[in-house]
Amino acid sequence: MYCMPLDRRSLRIIAFRGLTLTFTLIVVVILTAIIVGATGYDEVILRAVINEQVRAYREELSRPGSPVPPEERERMVREYRDTLVRVYGLDKPWYIRSLSNVPRLVTLDLYVTQEEVAGVLGLRRPLKVGDAIAVALPRTIIMITLAYVISAFISVPIGPYIAYKRGSVFDKSVIVYAAITNAFPVWWIAMLSIFIFGFYLGLAPTSYRPIIAQISKLSDAIYSLNITNIILTFKDILYYSYLPILVVTFSLLGAWLYSARAVAIRVVSEDYVAAARAKGLSESTIVRKYILRVIAGPILTFVILGLAGSIGGYIITETVFDWPGMGLLYYVAISTGDSPTILALVYVTTLVYIVARFILEVLYVILDPRVKL
Image (tube, rainbow, N blue to C red; front, side, top):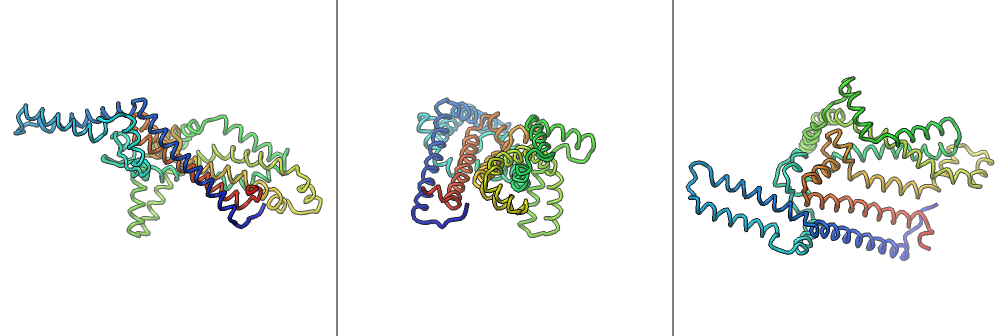
């Protein structure tokens, strides 16, 4: 496998794949909006939001000492309700309301409708879904994506060595380790870790919600270029994040090692690997030049799609840690029926997957000349 230059045919292949993936993204966004609208889900939520806003408006007009007479007050409340109905599009058919939200969804210009969703992020309404995701995403990257990166850095170089030494004690140990980590869910390991290292040993926090304030402090310190505050805040972030990162890495690493081993096993038995052994080449040379280069395509697919999937977060695991990232945002948005946030999360995770797939398509064309054929 080698890098080949991008000729005109290769560029046409990349452009076609890009258009196909873009079309897929558009279809997913439109179908999601239609499903939410056709089921009446968004109408139920929007009417509840309107009722809450009307109730607050009526209470404001009914405060002691208000000069507004009761008849005028009711007229103002009715006008306010009618205005909200028009603003939220409830005076239009569901399909018009749903499809009209698609352009705003693409630009993340919708607003969070539930206070619980904003509260889990440490924010308050009015809040755009784009701002909510911009706050939640770095927290998930710290906890989940970083664990994926660590697992990839460990497993990609070691996996071929495990396959090369198939049947050894090391190989059997990795298989047992992968079986154990696959048998226990990540969230169960998370609960056990909090109990042991947090409550019993006192080596880790028992509450991880303060990470909100620490990340905010780090942003302010970076913006003001205060090196001392950056170092101190980074230490605080590390204190609150090291256990979640270790838990997720421990749970993922077994699957990553086993997958890299499984991909490499087929290559290890090839004739050219046996010929390389017969030549007296070192193990590191055989693994690097004759195994790792050949399995680079499948491994690259596994790594990039895994990193893209990590952006969506782990709903149950983040809930166990009370970690205010994408997974917990998903959970609260679904449990409170915040349809704009749900739509935005589906759109963003699909967009990340589409971008990851496009990157893979480009790399395949560059690395593998067979794609062009």
